[in-house]
Image (tube, rainbow, N blue to C red; front, side, top):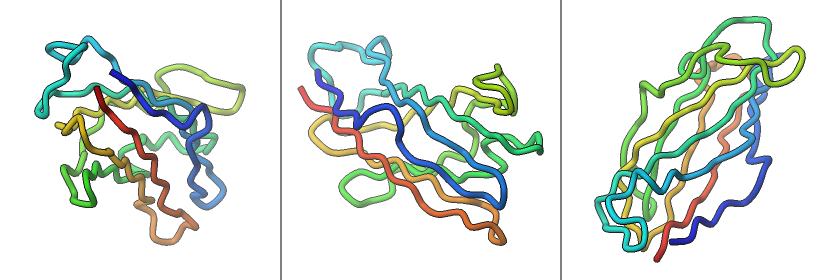
Length: 135
């Protein structure tokens, strides 16, 4: 099984004076029933580390809407990602959390994660990260 991950810095949002950075996306092979032979309906477990240097204690859910797309079709809208406003301190002035995504993906297709600002008055922009999951 290969995970095609573009690397450390996945993108960012500009939310007024706040910035949200996506630093890492990994896939936990233990979430697959058979890691060597992924099946189309395997549940894939994504860990995503985010940083928020805002003064607000707003959580990831409050700031960002997360969608999972496959082959251009919306697979699911993740309203309740498991994240906290300050699970641990990443850098001085920034807080971070782990976002756990559980999309059902076809292992022959590209999966796109979309992150969209929920704050219409902000200068937020959509960030996409494509992860390929193949044998």
